Image (tube, rainbow, N blue to C red; front, top):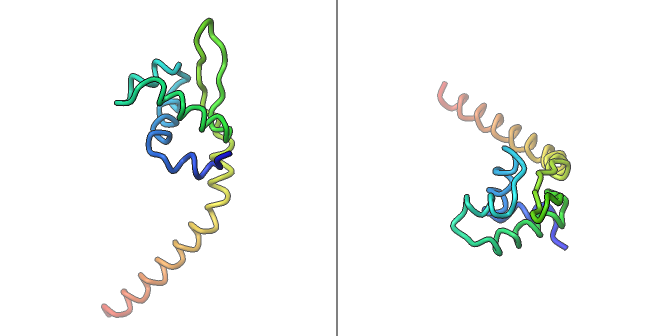
Length: 102
């Protein structure tokens, strides 16, 4: 089973999440945004669903997909210390460069 980061590594899946951020959509609606076919969009949705990034609901004969942001928040929480690390490193670099230009 793929993890959230593996699912997010694919640019098409990230684009699908961006589309779902605007509103829930069916596979056909989502497929209209991409140069790939409906079966490929369905495969990407299956990967996203497996890690909890989307959920679907029945609406007649269609499935409507919704963004589930919880796993994204968990990923952001995990990444936050690394972001702080790099911000600190960049501040240190700026200080060194500023000192050299004095």
